[in-house]
Length: 223
Image (cartoon, rainbow, N blue to C red; front, side, top):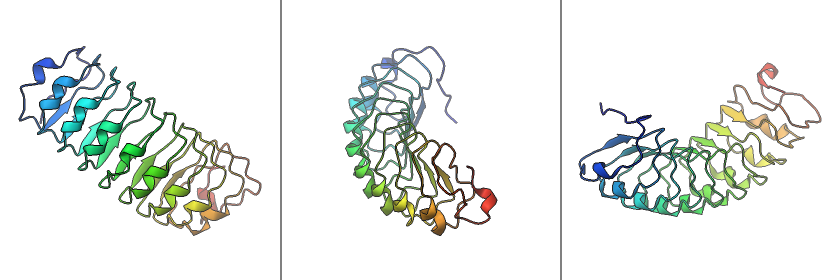
């Protein structure tokens, strides 16, 4: 098991550039801003850079063997270098400055994706990610969730603190067992009636006109 280098006060990763056989690297909670020396680590399949000071992720475009990548809690706005990482199955991008998610459109192997706490309004590029099982989009400015209708494998969906009012496009997501709609302008929840696998839908903070739980047992709904 590789030793994690998290919370080690690391600012420079240049000494790692020669470790070209590395397959797993954890560098969470440091002061790293320049990741260019990591471009040579093409054997990596797991890389975690959670909670650093990274804004430029261009060096990651060469790491095409990556399957797991954590970049949450950084200062990233441009994620276009990720478009070449077609083997990714797990990607964390929460708490950044991302508004354009179109570079993710080609990452069809993704099963787990988190994009909470960004500046996203348009999620149409995510419609092609049909293998997604877990998707987190909380704390953005999303109103139109129609692109999610094609994500039939979703089991967990987080949409808290957005601007969603129409949830009719969720009707097709019959594999959902967890749905978080906390704090949106949703008034009509009847579209959830077909989602019979839901265990505890969070509907709090919505102006729901009739608080009748559309799934059984009715006690599972949180209003």
